[in-house]
Image (cartoon, rainbow, N blue to C red; front, side, top):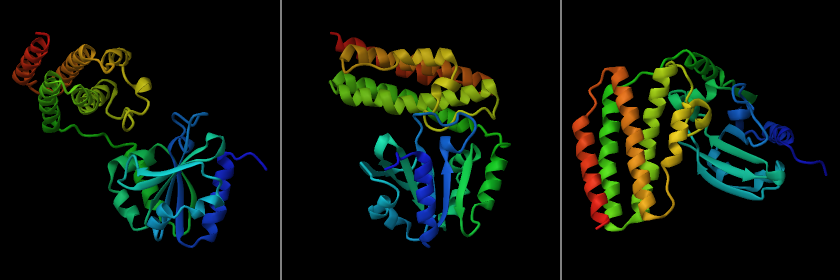
Length: 289
């Protein structure tokens, strides 16, 4: 039997989709459709499929054997678009995401800026039985020229949110809830920090500079000093280390937020920063007594 490859998976999917009238459109997005940061040996295959009765393709796994033998298969939310996808590991570790949507969802996805951003980086149309993708491709082209707006109120909200959660994390640590406090610092607070780092990066490198979605390619687009700073923002499951990671996270956030506020001529909320930082310091010293 011939070795299964991504190209063979694509060929088998096209044959299957052409014969199944429920499947109307099949697209490749992600690394195997783009020229900027193209696919390498670690890349998966991201497929977006518009089909009648899309839910049945997600729940009924029998159709998958037409593509290859699934060794691991499960459902998860799509990275963007608010849909569901079936992730499958085939032989040789071939990783394929099958995101299914009803054809009617295409018009809603066209309104989603994150979805359009993904398509603007690259899309390959494998099948389009009803010519549904013409408008989507046009919007993806237009997106390249769109400069994202910066909402000052949202930035202020991010800053206030962060300082509130710095106090909450310290309370959890002081109570002895190490995992809960660590989770707040590692997840919720880092997401807020990351959103400001993206804003700071676009302010420094141009509004059209691509900071991708989620944490994708952080080490490539972020300033090297920020990447280096992240080495001190995470801790082992050990109390003193978690306190240090929290305090380091607060310092990096402070520096980033002040820089963003200065660039946008926003008043940085020093009072909130100082109030939260003082409480964190009090709780930290209390735990050592």
